[in-house]
Image (cartoon, rainbow, N blue to C red; front, side, top):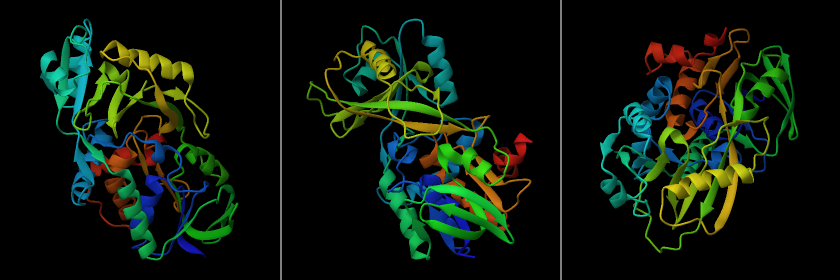
Length: 358
């Protein structure tokens, strides 16, 4: 065998798994693109907000906190703000309760985000428990750890076929054929396609497009200390970024796996929702892009051995939570593969198990 563990996918899920599994045996990671983290991982809003998502996602995010806080410079305080127009107060209260946020006055919100239009904003909520993640540092740290333990990372290796062989798997790719005892499916939007190639029953993952624009500001304000801001119900969001703002319509449009790009009309609608709440119009787009956030049917990550093919391991469905859950998700994957007792509760492990879809 070429490796004990062959990982398909070089986003944050696959790279973090490579680092963890490299302590257990030989690792080979195959990435289809020229570079690691090309698709969704490279297009992330890069936030650690541990109360964001369903309970099982929150559990993984909280469990990742110690790892992230333990690396100097990994987390930078950002804060999060949700703002509401007249008629949206009840929806704001739901958001605030779901993410353990404090209700604040509109004036307090304007003090934190001076571009807000006080004539429109009637209610707001804030949390200081939100940080920027240095995603490149996290990715490179995991990759360095993997390579330091002898892991082989191969790019330009799009997988075209997978065959079951005695004692493991054979994977055909653009970079050649490889064999391994255990196959780890961390292929992001392509996880169901990888499963089908391996003769494993797909679980029904759905990639969802999310668009983003980087806009210039004419006010000259220093935005570096401003919080990330959402419309109620995550109808749009914006985040400071190197003197500009990232603005997203926060759409979730079902798509087939592909190299995603922003939809101009959807982007314009999202920018209009943002403009309603601020005093400065959008005058210039510096750039725009889109990524695919891939969800399982219940919108919770899937981490565990396939019930029919025990040497096929799912590490999938990160949705929009890949970076902030990566430390705990990869640790759990390694624990399960090694047959160790996970640090996480049995209930949380069961909520992530692919067996829940049977």
